Image (cartoon, rainbow, N blue to C red; front, side, top):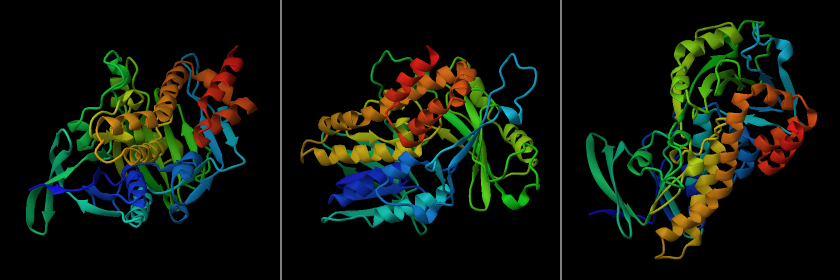
Length: 415
């Protein structure tokens, strides 16, 4: 016999917790499913922008390790350039308000889950089950059934769970994304723009392991975005409390040579980048992560609502995924709460689609911006050297102000 639940949420990361928190706070009974015990390692540089912190329902100060009001941008080497970019070519940006707060992803996730599991109010309830995997998913006329494999002590068994609505929040590699193929807004959408995910490789380096003077001339605690290592992405240095996170990734692979770019993200590239920037090649905790892209075209339908990376909602310019995860999880919860009992299929999906549109419009803008930037990077860096444009770009991507203001300014800047 299936076990009945009011709402199932697959994945207890930022998207799943954001949805679960709002639903349980509103009096719903929610079951979270995840294949990991918390805390657990999660590949993610975990820079929390101001718009991300604002979107959260609670402060996360206990897990913030560093707050950055300055950022260093390393320019791309143009094809005509004879020498590599020099330190003098760097752009150093300072904001009056913090640009980004730094956390370690496993601690951030565990903290958010703890907050979510204590969020039940107004008769609501929320609990977490650890599962091994999802075996099958079947969408019926008035419910969804999920067969899950669970291990309890020495016993492994399959259980069938049933709910009117399921929220898929288990990431780009998650099973809900594979079992429920994301739909696009139009069958004529170019597949190259929606089906190619990004990829990032990262590692951690203790400050104690660094030489006294870095070969790049950077300070160990600086926040760095480096567009030199490869087109379509960037390298980064994200400072934490006792270590820094270093990585390389491609976030805009939807180009003619996208597959080739993804294949360039290797351990050898990361080691070479660490040697160049930090003067070391021995790295700890080297891990990779597929990044769900193309979500600007995702069209929710039926009884399974995909959120975050599972819906491909990673920003194609910055590679930021936590903000989209949180806001899409909240959007899914709001859609469920806005629909009366018994009207939970097309109604919920339609409301969720409307709720997602502002985020999807922003992601579509980011995709266009990413293509334009990587096609003519010198123009992007020219804009960043202009105080007014620099301030507006930072506010757009850190604070989430409407991108239409940036479009208007860019049109004037390039005219």
